[in-house]
Image 1 (tube, helix red, strand yellow):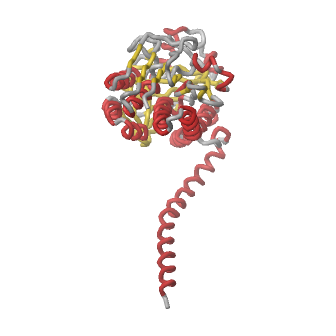
Image 2 (cartoon, helix red, strand yellow; image 1 turned 30 degrees about the horizontal axis):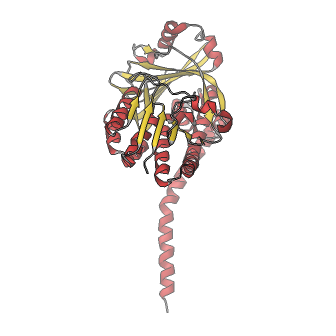
Length: 405
């Protein structure tokens, strides 16, 4: 059945949904309305992992190939604590510039017949009247969602720490963390490459460190100079860059909604939910929203049933990511309690920060738990090896007993 769809917002979620809908049925009338001019975007690079590529390959191999070919990769992590450094192998990560990601998605959408209308803001008062479905892909500050905030049950919770999203010409060869102790408390950054000669560098600190260092009043030039000095040992003389909007230090806001649709209006991506940046899942979750919404619209011809299915599916799928993001944010807010640990222990904690226990575990107790976990993991591996063998032996004995006269 041919439908007319208006996607408000030309970010990853809106563009990828338009691609999937046109692949499902080329007769669909799909338009993406983006308020900003084409080629203007915020942010530096975004991260994703192999699982996202597998998902994209299953739904649109051409987009997946283009994404893969334009991404950088790493399979190690580095942690710098004071003058100590440790490096560990880990899961393969991918980075791509947000600008390049949007170029790929826009080109693919156009090739399928999607209309892209840039510099064309759509407000809550002038929605396309003849659209069968209106997709609010207009981000965390969604005007479409705000108009019906009571219906959606929108809630915002604000974290404690301050952070700033920067770029640098230093190309990190691994996912890099650096923790620096100052006279006003700890400040830390993490960085990852995303393209030729470019990396993302996110800096975070407690509010008292932010004000104590004067970052709240330093201005862009002064703030960048101070951060370049603090992280000189990982930047190797390379500069930091602020984005077009300047050097802003917000506290992260986690957004949730009680429901994700209202009539023929549905939320997707950051308009529906946000997860703390420290787990690097925002883009992945937005693209997965698009996959789920397209699938629900394919399976159900009645719009209410399709939107209900989409909401149920994504709510369930998001629970682990939302939980991990919440505990990761809390772990960073309690970070100073762990920074006297040896670097290898510190790095182990970085990988385990999504646990609901870690933000509340004293360092001395963590040492004991860590040693116990190591012994338990050895037992678990032995159990996984032994279990199938015992099962096969028991089955063979049962069969032999059954066949005995």
